[in-house]
Image (cartoon, rainbow, N blue to C red):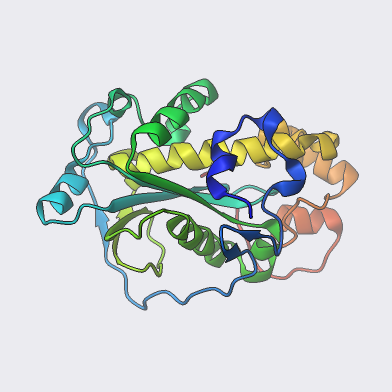
Length: 270
């Protein structure tokens, strides 16, 4: 059985590509073809004020800890807007009584350089109470749509935690189904420490995967663009057509393949 947690920790050159998450592979008791779980019909989304110095804070976690909820997990995803590869989510549970040095440096992963993310990810995983990574494959994205697949990757990230959280803080405004209470926080990756930490862990894990598969499809330079729609990537897509890692349900890929329209899928900057 393959352990989720190894993939986010291993350097790209050490990743066993044939053992990475692919369609139908059981990972820590989870099957990537597991059915989607319906989300609640109603969702209350909180918008927090921008923190001073643009640094996320633990104010939401502290409030929940004071209420007696100790296992509070922050969740974020990466790869939602890419044209190729999986969507990856991470869940991070902070230790209530710990104040590791990385707290002053963590930010939304998009605000950090690759070097900063690579330095922070192992520090985060070494000092938090718990963390897990969940994946939804390119095939699942095309079969279910990007929003359900993103939700599925988040459910798997929670399932990959050693201990079921008592409460979940999730970035964004989408509906979810978790085995506990949760709150959606708009721009949570920039405002809530546990969500920001999760964004870093997820980003490093997905980047490692895209770098590991880049050699299979050198024309598209996934090691550099990570599957996102850079100008060079779009040119290669137009010239060569899509490879097996491309999401056929996304309009630029569908058009490059000459496929008939299926549904409107717009890239997101996340």
